[in-house]
Length: 443
Image 1 (cartoon, one colour):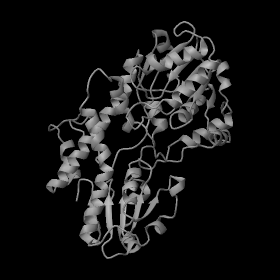
Image 2 (tube, one colour):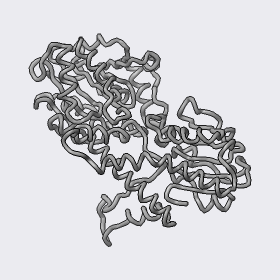
Image 3 (cartoon, one colour):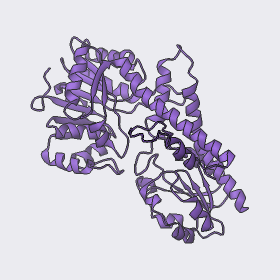
Image 4 (spheres, one colour):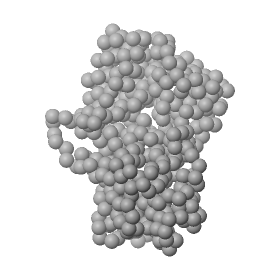
C-alpha cells in the first residue's frame, strides 16, 4: 500500500478528545477523512462545522472552520463506510471496571463493526491506550473472526497510542514523539508513513506489546510521581511546612553554572485529586497485563494515595469548620471546578465527584460551578453569594483571577472558608482578609 493524500481514504473511529483533532489534522494534510461515532448529536454538530470539545483548545476551532470549508472531512454513524476505507484509526475509550480490569465494550464493539466491513489490504491502527497483550489477545481475534481475513497476509494491524492532554490536543499530536507497534515490520512502516504527515516529532517502530507497555507505563510513571507529590504535601501539612516552598527548593537542585534544560529533580504538582481518562486507569491497564505473573506493589499504592486526595480535601473542610465553631450541615458550600483539569471540559474520573459524594452525607447545601460543563455553567458571583465555604478543585483561569477582596464581600459570613485544592490563592492574603484558609500541603 502506498499512502498518499490523493488516493488514501481514512476513517477515524471515535470523535472525542483524540479522534477529532487527529481527523482534522489528517484532513489538513489533504486526506479524505470520514469520522465514525455513535453519538448522532455529535455527528450532526461536526458536519455543521462545530467543535464538540468545549475547553480551551488553541487552534482547534480555527482548524475546524478551515476543514469544514474545504469539505474533506465528514462524520457519520454508519460503519459500512469502512468497506471503502484504506486506513482505519480507532480512538475509542478504554476505561477500567471497579475491580480494576479493562472495560473494553466500546473497543470490542468498534472492532466488530470494523471487521464486518474490513477490506482486503486495509491497515487498522489502534490509538486507544490498552493493556499489554490486548492487540494479540483481543484486537486481532475479533478483526479476523468478523472479517475472515488473516493479519500480515490480508490486512495490516498496528497500534500507535495517543499522547494528548486537554488544552494541548493539536500541539501534542503535532510535536510529541510517537511509538508505533506493528504486528509485523510492514504494518509498522505503513503506520509510520501515515503519521509522518501530521507528526513532527520522532516516530519509532517496535512490536505491539512493547508499544502497549510504553504507553501504559508512561502514565503509570506520572501517577507514581503525582502520588509522591501528594504524600509529600501530606507530610508538610503534618509538620507545619509549605509543600510549595519545599517543592521549589527541591526542583532548584542544580550545580553552579549548570546550563542544562532538564532539571535534576522534578517533583510534580500535588493537589485535590487526579482525574482524566488516562492516569486513573492506565496504571491498572499496565498491572492487568502482568496479571498472574507478578504482584506489583508501588503502582497500586500510588493509585491508593491519589484516590485519597478528594477525601483529604473533605477532611480539610471539616477542620476549617471546626475552627469557625460551626457545623457543615445546612451551610452553603461552593465547589469551583467539576472538570478534572484547568480550562478543560473533560470531567472523566474527576476527583470532584467523590468529594461531592462525601459532602452529600453532611446535609450541606452544595453548589457546583464550572463554566466548561453545561450542567454547572452558571453565574459565578451568584454561585458564591453568601457561601460559607469555597472548595477549589480545578485551576481554571476564571478562578485564578478571582479578586479575594471582592470574594470576601460576596461570601459575607464572619469566618468564610477557602479550601484551595490547586494552590490558586495566596494564603497570606486570604487570612489577612479574614478567611479561614486550608490548602493542599499548606495549612
